[in-house]
Amino acid sequence: MDSSRFIPFLSIAGFFALWIVAATLSADPETLPAPWLLITPLVQEMASGELLYHLNATLWRVIWAFALAMTLGVSLGLIMGRSERVNLWLDPWLVIFLNLPALVLIVLCYLWIGLTETAAILAVTLNKIPNVATMLREGARALDPNLDAFAQVYRLSWMARIRHVILPQLAPFIAAAARSGIAVIWKIVLVVEFLGRSSGIGFQIHLYFQLFDVTMVLVYSLSFIVVMLAVEWIILQPWERRVRRWRVAC
Amino acid sequence: MDNSATLGAACQALACCMLEVAIKSKSFGETPVLGQIDLTIKRGETLAITGPSGVGKSTLLRIVAGIDTDFDGTVSRPKSLAMVFQEPNLLPWRSALDNLLIAHTGLTRRRAVHMLDRVELVDKIDAFPGQLSLGQQRRLSLARAFACAPDLLIMDEPFVSLDPDLAASMLDLTETLIAEHRPATLFVTHNHSEADRLGNRVMTLQGAPAQLELATVGKASPTKNYT
Image (tube, rainbow over all chains, first blue to last red; front, side, top):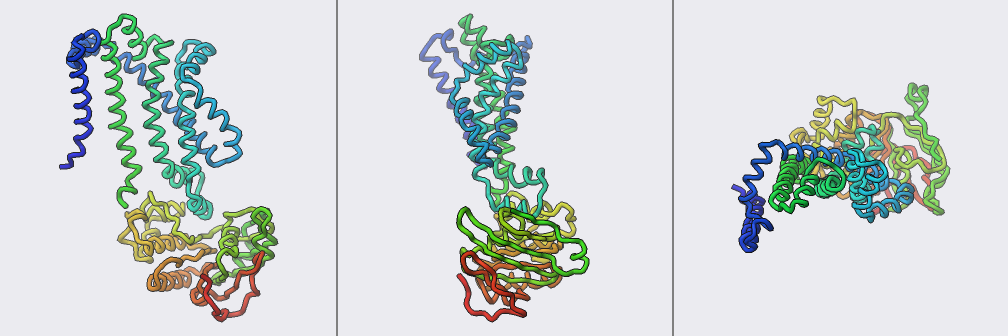
């Protein structure tokens, strides 16, 4: 049996071991409770439906922002990588947005649009688009001109070119952008919820922060980390294995 | 400026010329690469072009294939054309069979399998190009080109970097497929013996800017191989 399959589980076990040691050393459950002290409040929150309600709200915001940021970022990066003229025009914008602090964009979106769902999702999307576009621009610049020539000579349709020639070449860049994107987006979503929403994990963390309830802050944070790990293992990694199948076979 | 157009229907109906090239000039920046070039190829005819490296053979083929449209002149080519590139230029993430099916939208699976059989790759239908040897990849590239029974076939040194035995067997296969399908063929090579073997006419591209030597009737006598 391949022992490497167990390494991620051992790694997580190591994380919990470290946590237990730190909790034991602090000897103050109000500052850092041991992992098992989260079980009862977790079960209570799940039974009351509170946890699922807030998880659901955050998850939808993450899905919307992720889908928008990936779609727009991939398109923008592809166009900028393929056209030097477009790149000359848009590169300064990219640099500005890359260096604009997430907090500034969030506050401006709330001020200009109001404390709405649209503003929240737009703020997160705008924060992530520049990163995705930058990664995909490099991918588009690395596209093989010989395969372009093949597509041109054999008159591949626009759709066929995208599907069979361009996207497979961009897959590693899209995978990298998706992986870093999903991790960054949910962190920004929490900030957005913290500042201006009345639902979601970020809102709950804000609430329990005011009550100085470390246990509940950890319950809500870890519950969403579990969701994101599930996304990584159930969606992202299998997809990545599928698109890398031809490399593995060679 | 590219004034390329599909060949007139009347001309094709008479089975006269499949390809008509009238290039006035082609430059890269301030550097002229190709001078006046006029050539025609009829159905079933193979024109082989030889010439030293860097003279502009591949540039000429890119213009003929419609990849390079930034030139002064006209090219009349049929709609149905295929090209065998110097490198196999296969889609490494698609199977051998899919490489044929993707290249030709109207191609049936049966015809694609038949073509793979013709190039002795029928047992590699599901293999990715990376799992094939260079010789097999080139055969797959050949199958892709002939799968649509093209009216015009363009070949850019398809036997380069193959060992002599493999190159000879590829040459046999290509000769057979050309005889079966009878496309108008434009074939570029460094190797005079390959040019003499496949070409009905052999011309040489040389000079700066490069021009074609006058076509000879029959085959040119081999003088030297450009490497």
